[in-house]
Image (cartoon, rainbow, N blue to C red; front, top):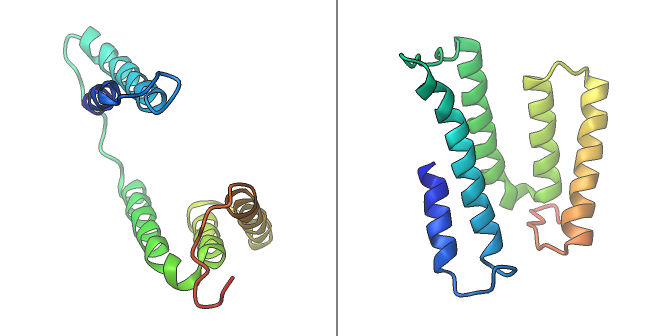
Length: 135
C-alpha cells in the first residue's frame, strides 16, 4: 500500500493534465492501494492473523532460479542481442520451470521470440541491442 501511496503522491506532483503524464502513475497508485486493502482486510477481520506458510524448498529454489535467470538475461542482453538472449531466456524458463516437451518448448520459444521481435522492433520501433552477431 505504501508503494501505491507514493505513486499517487508523485502523480499529483506532476504538472500535466490528467489525460497526460499523470494518468498512468495515478491509476497505478490507486490500483496498488486497492490491492493492498484487499489483502489487508481479510487478516483484519480475523481475531488472530496467521502468517502464510513459508514456501517449501522446491518453490524457493524456483524463485532463486528465476531471479538468477533474469539477472543472466540482463547481463547477456548487450552481448548476445535482444533476439538471441530472449530466445535463450525463454527456452531456459520453459524447460526448467514448465513441464513442456522439447518440441513444445522450442515451438513456444520460437513464437515468443518472433512475436517479441515484431512488437518491439517492427511495430514500436524500439532500439534494442543487436549484440555481437548483429541480430
